[in-house]
Image 1 (cartoon, rainbow, N blue to C red):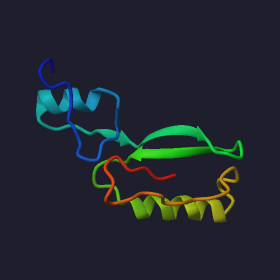
Image 2 (image 1 turned 180 degrees about the horizontal axis):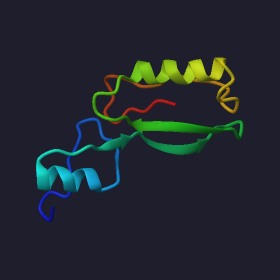
Image 3 (image 1 turned 45 degrees about the horizontal axis):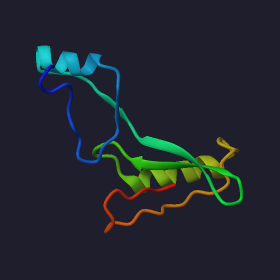
Image 4 (image 1 turned 90 degrees about the vertical axis):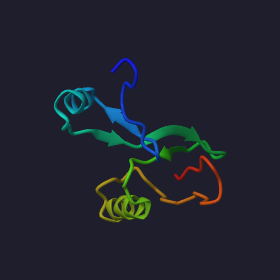
Length: 97
């Protein structure tokens, strides 16, 4: 744990908690919860938006976007007014909001 405190996933994300990492190092098996890395930004009109810069490894971006859009359409999340994928496959460090 001193040399390698945790795994480094190719698409990034945030590992929640340390128990899964400790279990993996001590027993060879462990369960990790990885969440997307986000930030809050204000646009030119003064509206806040959530910018997702890293998604967990093996998570399909289009699935996330479609599930959020479905929640917006069903009024499960009423605070969201727009869902857009602004990522660029060619740009390094691309983000979507």
